[in-house]
Image (cartoon, rainbow, N blue to C red; front, side, top):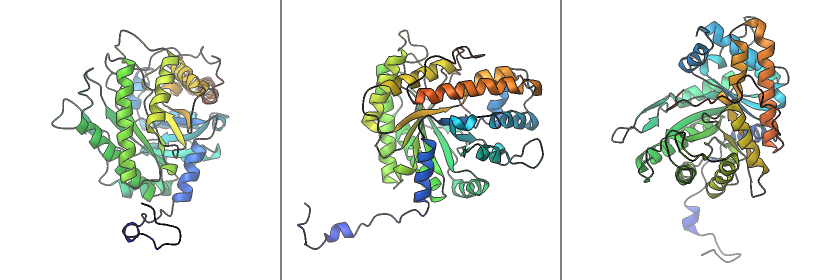
Length: 379
């Protein structure tokens, strides 16, 4: 029971002081708040060399460093991008690369548009032995040293992706072991990032692969996110200096009955209300294989809901921001202006969706309606 006013403090409470305050605390909170600015979101341009190679193969472009640099430089120099994009996740190669002029750092192109540079820090998934094909993400061992190096290079936030699967409708997957291991690893990553000045984006993605219903997806996603915040609390992570990057709650890709955008929005927001503390400034959704247009429409429906939403509900899209842009570019310098127009159309559409004010203006993009789904997606 609490002590009466004027009585000496409880010695048991005094024996367990708060953890030493992080010297980066004020900066972490300011960075997270800036990324969660109303009307803006994140461009996820952190595809590994292998994944960007698959994207390039779809437009018959060779996957080499020169083409990867040219593509990302084109994205980062899109006029007006900073009006709708507050942060950009990069791959390590991009963070340290320079533009075609041989001297300008690509990260400086982002800063010029007042876009916060970020960095993908995980090293992909590995089998979680003893489970039915489940995984855990690797990369913790040298993370502290890498985070210090990334901060020095200009990055101010990081991303780590955990992957969980629904392989049945009985509740067996994801297994308690997979949930626990991935939640613990995400929390450890977050604590290491904050110790080095980087805002951690916590990304526990429940894949859309499967034939499960939206009700099953909601139950699983709630269980996963709740486990993550328990571990984040146990690891003394400053929630005000973090962001969450979850999947939207949806029926499985192979489900017979497909949930509508309105249903996805309602179930997703309800899931978050039940699991995410209001201290978290922003929730930056992944697109999870949805088409560009669908990802925008669902985000808009969420922000139109008249309900309690103590966090910014925004986007952290890769495929759902870049697909039309990539199809317009085709690896040709003469197509760059057209590609930039496609990117800014989608960025603006998602910026409007964050405000709940999107009215379908971007539905006619070069590949706006095409699915971006990839089974068992990894990057």
